[in-house]
Image (cartoon, rainbow, N blue to C red; front, side):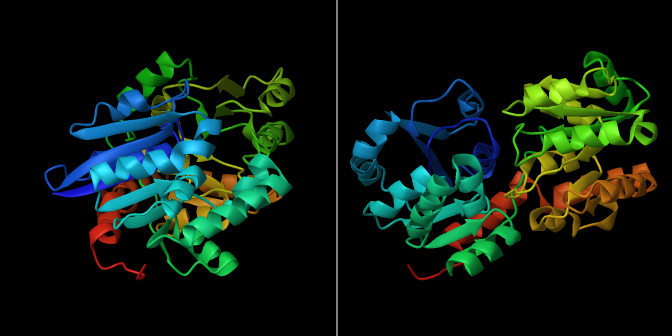
Length: 376
């Protein structure tokens, strides 16, 4: 039986962890001994409990603080790997990439690149620290057997920008047993449960309230086009640095809703009609794929990662020019003119055929044990 080991900092809730979850769940346990090694103690917003429900999955942790990680993670990980003797080691995130790049092992080293790393690091940590982190991660990634961009857009970008030649693209996949479309009767039940207007058109957006995600742009569109959108409700789920500003801006407008961070995102998606995003940068948004699986047509910015989602089927959504208010409302109205049931069916079919965690796992198995080789 082949042994597969995933390495990551923690199982903190988020897109990166969702990718690991999909792989850990759908790898065939009759063929593969699947293990996860986390480097640090779990934070309060961990998905550990969900991972513990996966049968025959083994979860280990070094339980190191950030400082301890700098001093001891390589040595402790080296000892763990020597004992486990995995055939494949798959890292997720800069800390895990750093550890995997430095240890001695005969295992096949795989790393997933979860976004446009220079943009991600500088937007999150500032220009100076972000670029230093980017430079470090690129040096780690060059030591892997194969790097996997979480979309073809990401793979193409890092190959051209950083001369990473050991890169391929595999689209992220979501768990379609959790995110799926429901009947009209169930949808109305969920609206009642969530206090969502029964007969209104509901636009959903999910994610952190940051300048990268641009929730303020969406709120401002509902204020700017009051007459056009007065019968349509905007729900933005999540929290972050721009949350209070959005709340203040939305005061007095009964069709703008900001519930904060919720644990039942899937129910909101199942109750909604359309998904909208103003994001400036993504890897390959799990939130968008979750919306597609729930049958929601999409209104997305025209960044390459979002274009890659919509290229599979013209009926599942529209792109609008980033930061362009007039194009936003124009594409919104265009999307509303598409037959909603046709768009819904196409979204569901596309999620199953292209963006399921099961399909993603099949593609990764080819990287782990198949024909994808770069010779390291």
